[in-house]
Length: 301
Image (cartoon, rainbow, N blue to C red; front, side, top):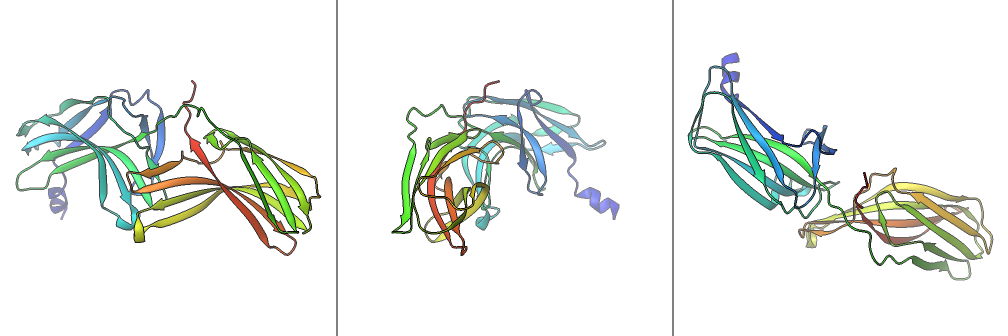
């Protein structure tokens, strides 16, 4: 029985390493088996350089019809699990057909790689970047090894960043005005604002501000929308009076946010909303939602 198990094991070990993998910033990603792993972080137009080591298991040789490495950017929709849409695909041939008797290393380089989208692991969709090494063989299955890496792209501060001012109310019962200092925030930003009570004729019990993420995947009849509340921040506990002003100061850094993604490769979007919720003494909820844009600002070292 042990012999049979051994017969299906690949005759070699493959290791894919990045030349600057130890000094490069790392990020955690979720693997297929549900475990998290630390992988190096790149940004678009960087060079991806490293080497592939193939080491035959003692006493074995590897006959092959060629060795290649691919750099793939892929989107997987979970309702179509197992089908990957490649939006980036580059290939480098590493070896011509032959035999490998002992450990062999192959350097590789992908120069100025366009990686327009960020790595993302959401509720219904995943966008990933991988290096894939394939040892092609006749008559038996190919030997394949994967290595994940992460992509994060940075944006400059927006030149125009208008504040958000809105009025909301119920006729003759409630009239409030709220203001947020801007409409675009970076991932470590602070939301600063104020809420003014112009008319209060219902008894408000409490008020909170929520950050919501809305992920939409697919298109047409196959559109799936998933809304998730990432943060709840209590602004007020007790009844406000007319003319009262409530300050808002909400730090974004404790929450696991991503930038706003709009129509990524016609497959998915991720948007963020501030949701202002008021609850009266009869537990009726009144809310007003406003979209904000989130971007990744270059971190200063």
